[in-house]
Structures are given as C-alpha cells and as structure tokens.
Image (cartoon, rainbow, N blue to C red; front, top):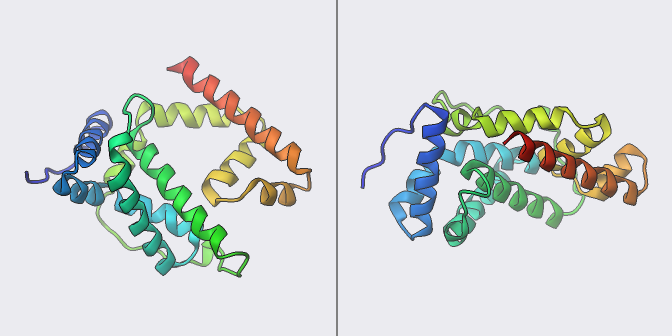
Length: 193
C-alpha cells in the first residue's frame, strides 16, 4: 500500500494518523514507515528538548519507534489522540534516558542547534484540532503554580523532586500541586468535550 500525503484538515489528519497507527498495531511494516514519516519530526523535537543532545535524541527516537511497534496494538483511539499517545511515549523514553545518565552537565535548550526542515510537519496540523485547543485553554485556566509545575514536568522532563527544588517547596507540596492541577485539567477537558 503506497503512502498518501497527510491530509491538511486537522480532523482528517487525526483520522488518517489513527488509521496508520492501527495498521502499525496489526504489524504492517509499511504503516510503521508512514507513521515515522508523519511523526518523526515532532517526536524528535520532544526527544531533543529533553535530552539536550542530538545524538542522544536520535538514539531515544529509535527506542520510541521500537516501543510503538511493540505497543501500537494497545492504542485506543477513544482514550487519546494518536499524536498525544506517541508524544507521551517519546517524552517518557527521553526522561528515562535523562534519568539514566544522572546529573551530568548538558547545554541549555536555547543553545541547542536549530533543526532545519522546510517541510510542513503533519503533526503540527493535527495539534491545532479542537482537543489541543481545549487542552491549552484548560491549562491556561489553572493556577499559575500548578500550570508552571505541569508544563515544566511535561515539557522539560523534570521530576517532582527537581520541580520542588526549583520552587523551594517540600516534595509533598509539589506532588499535591501537580495532582490537583491534573485533576482540574481532566475535569475541564471532559466538561468541554
């Protein structure tokens, strides 16, 4: 089956990515190749942001697609968007790599080289869908400390202990902020949906 260009309509793009992911779950190697083509730029960006090193991010990205190949059959379209499911795997693998290497010094993300790619990223068109907008609106509605803790944990890959240390609060307080923030976020997203 030849791969078709990704749809530009966010709803159609999400449906297409869901279909490709489901085919990957059925051990369709061409679907995995198409999934890689559609999502690798986005997932590489997540890995690079957390790892801070290009080579490490490339290695982690390979682990991400091995995990996707093994676990795509467990993807449930009704529970999460395909790009959210994939991004979570990428984030978790990058955090695992980051934790495994300990506290070695790394360069700040602002000093990392830009990744040149003039092609539009298919996943970027999917992220503008209603679910993403709703999530961002709900995230913006949280208290500042909860929003900052959740964004820092998910986008920078920090642990609860690192977050607590940065904010100068006890570990239990930080866990409570994040837990309550995630509860409110879940309630907000489900109310609007």
